[in-house]
Each structure stands twice: as structure tokens, then as C-alpha cells.
Length: 135
Image (cartoon, rainbow, N blue to C red; front, side):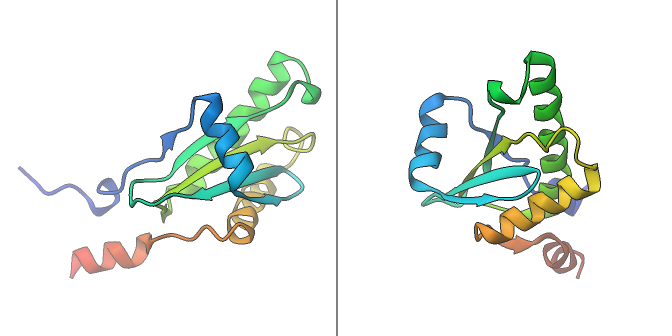
């Protein structure tokens, strides 16, 4: 059987689902706000893959608007975190009023900026990890 591709060796982020997990990140984590989103990040004491949760409050709009906003956040996170090997951190992305109407490339840049502001860095840059496995 063939070896898995290097990009397949990194795990996708887990999910935060329980209210207590969201509250713990909000109470103890670092917060970074941008035009399109708010990021809360809490370092953990392990090397497990990052876990991520998404939330959009009712003041943003009705269920349809909130779900669309949440889907945009999920897709931006999926694309941005696929390029990074982030471990040992819980992330919460909070949708804002501007999330829904923001151009998607700008939303992705907001996420990158928020990750930098919150001090969330890749434990091993994916490109160097791939290079090390190829050599």
C-alpha cells in the first residue's frame, strides 16, 4: 500500500460543541477583533490538533442570516487552517454584522490577521513539514 500524502498526515481541526467549552475560551482566552469577525483563542496543554467553534448571535439576524454567516466563517477557516499545522489551541470564531457582506478574500485576510493578533502560530509550517518528508 502507498504512503499517505504529506498533506493527509495532518488532522483537520476538531469542533467545540458544548456551551462550557465556548465559555472557557471566552473567559480565559485571548481575543482579536477584525472588521469581519472576532477570534477567541485559548492555548491548551497538549499537542492535539486545534479545535474550533463558530457562533453568530441573534442580533446579526434571523436563522437564515446567521446560518449563512456561520457557513462563510466555516469555509474561511477551512481554507486558512488547511495551510497550517495548528495544535494545542481552542479557537472560537464569532460572526459580526460585517461578516455576511464582506468580500470573501477580505474575510480570509481578517482571519489571518486575527490569528496573528491572538498569537496563534502553526506548530510546524506545513510547507517545511512537506519538504522534510519529501527529502
